[in-house]
Image (cartoon, rainbow, N blue to C red; front, top):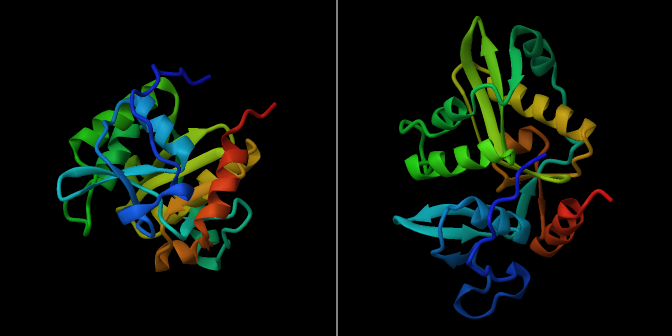
Amino acid sequence: MPIEPPPSPWDFPDPSAVRGELAGSDVIAVGADLEPGTLLAAYRAGLFPMRVEGALAWWSPDPRGVIPVNGMPLSRSLRRAIPRFGVTIDAAFTAVMRGCADPRRPHGWIDDSFIDAYSRLHELGWAHSVEVWQQGTLAGGLYGVRIERFFAGESMFHRISNASKVACWAALELLRSDGVTLFDVQWTTPHLRSLGAIDLPRDRYLRKLREAVSSRG
């Protein structure tokens, strides 16, 4: 079971009730920190962190990208690719984060402070990685945050063609079998749409989130 860290001293605004200059913006708040309790409070509120010109910003995109847990199409190319790779879970979390943080990737935002923060969440049992291997080499992977029936997919990468798709497929297979109902991918992109991602209005996303992070009972 994950270890609950000390609560955050910060109060995050409800994204559905934001008014004023932030109304209509994907950025809901600026500041705070990357302590484990702060990160968990943010995800439970429907927010995630990314920096804007060096400042720590908390985002709630409208619309929000999600992949339905039964919605990833298994294309012919992916079906052929799966047997060529080996998949592990939580075997190389920091290596996956560093793969996602490769400075050669455009629009990179994962710096050492994020790697340190999410590695602490991983040690507490909240952040997880999927590694995809070929001949003993890390070919790709993804990482994210799991809270009850919710998974926030933070980033993925590949060094060999199809490796990130295999990572996403493996993550969805595992999470669906374990009762996850909401797989968040922040924004849809052409690549994520090819994996089945769709847009949800913020209010609908937040309703699904509240259901997913509640106790399984």
